[in-house]
Image: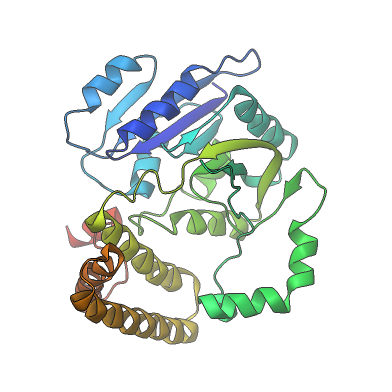
Length: 326
């Protein structure tokens, strides 16, 4: 088996249906692939129907909504391909894309993780010129100054005529990795429930001497926000996890003195901003975005309390947290 396509789903049935149809239509004489869908316990009575409609694919139900990293690791454990393509359910893929990813990876063994161009429903390409979070470019304003200061250097790095360019990390929506590399870095880090696990994965590959690359030779459709941002409560939850995952990443990759500084700044930045927006939401209650910030503030204060109580930044929803508490 050349490629194992692993898709983690949680109640994203409409997007998943389109993704699986695109995989179903792939006909290739140059490679063999399998498709594995991990349902993170959607528990909405739709899994069996999906299984029937796509009986040629393998479905597994997770024990709970255990997060993206855990779902990916679970899917990888069930796969047999020499390469693994972790694919979001809100994507669509073609025969050409699958073949190009494999050909590029085989031709460039120094690449640890490969991705490709991604375009959304408005025909806009995603920005994939990602840099690892560092002390001098962790926050939005500092990132703007960094990119202006090193504009020419970054232009030389990313704006080339080469078929490949090399960001620090790629989105978890499309991650192509050999089984050898996946085993070497011990898979996805389950400290995270959702978000930043892709940055962490790429960081581990880089620390082990591998390259992160994006090929310009092919493009995959990726619906913007199609798998996670559904309603006000979901938005508040996912935005909370973005902040939590930043704290987890800081604790994993910054030295002690940097951690103290950045963790403190992140807490202050988050609480002050969300407090102001929450107060505004009491008067402008008809604006849904402001209600999200009020729910987010409640979530993040609960998280900070648990972080102090349990002496860990790990997401309370993550599998490593649950293992620690058991």
